[in-house]
Length: 256
Image (cartoon, rainbow, N blue to C red):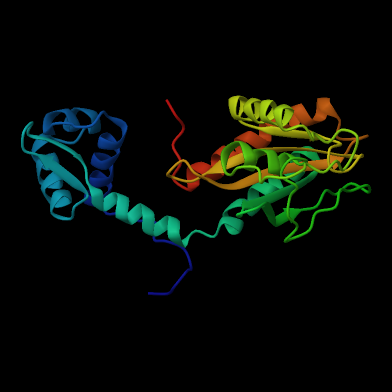
């Protein structure tokens, strides 16, 4: 058979039904019985019983002896972790950086938290003639950038020492910064208005992994005359949506 480079179009019916059973368990409470799964999937109960036995043998579901019901098995966790370990964060996030630039016309950045700073690991430049400067490997200033504030709010503590003033807007009082970080935590995003560079504004949002830990930060930045408060706030909608999408791909589940 000739190779097409694409998956086959024909599906195996029994595998599709097994996936329906797993989906029913995933969307339910902790446990479901055979008849309830049959009702939810539209598969007859005897077939559901055989599918559950097969899935249980593979560790994909577990039979709970006390209740006679079934729940998802730990093998799914192992498989999910194996997938996550193989994900390249930059490859995963790059289409979202392009989408953010297409939506906002501003420069989109991807930063990764390190011990002392959030480091720019990828970016897509704005198509505008006047652009902000982004560089791979450039560390954020924790107290004077939007990405840095996200890292301080969700990922690390501010080192001891004096907070340097980069502009007249830079927050240098620790009590004021603490209040700012509490605001970042409560609303789930950070902004920076001329705090590292006089004419540079930025917004940033966290990216979470399956354990709810900060693994990256998506940001948008632009020249202050063009990327003012109004446009920054408008850009937060697509920014947070893209950050949530990347987080979901990494196994994060939004709190209910």
